[in-house]
Length: 198
Image 1 (cartoon, rainbow, N blue to C red):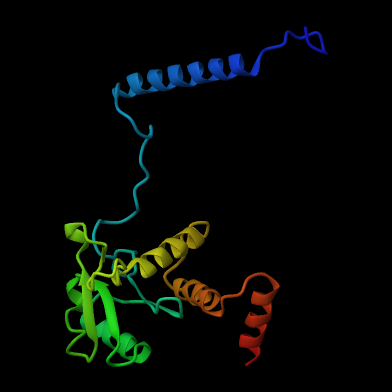
Image 2: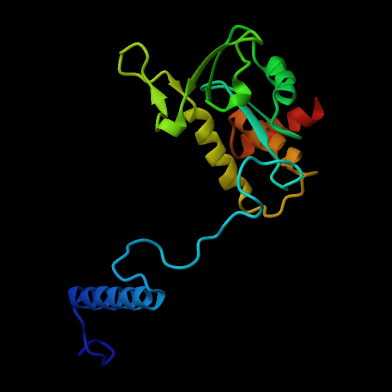
């Protein structure tokens, strides 16, 4: 008996009971769902609202163009549509002519060389996410910097559900500012006040 008159149970025994109960509950849930022997998460997978495919303002999934220089500044713009005529002014205003631009193989970027940029691509459709072109063991051609940024942006926007399309550019602008000043806490507040007063 323990201190309070309750029976003492060894930690190993308790862990074993919990594991058995957990595995039994999982087996029951899988059997009820008709998934015996399958691994993975139970329950319904949450789907995004709207039709699949590229986003548009009409579908309530506005496209966002992101440009980032590795280890430097980011530019984010919400687009009305995903067309070359829409992205060209944004790219020419933000990227120095002659710069090397890495993208995926989406057709919208096909005219970058005609606009005065060097252009290299990775083909996600073939499972290519990074490529070492000069054999030094370092994958120079990739879009992982921007993909990582999208992941940060999505996780930052997630708590702010149902952002209106009118307000989304403000959220994007703030996140762009926070990324570009590279400050956190009180230092971020100081940079924000300085930017607002200038």
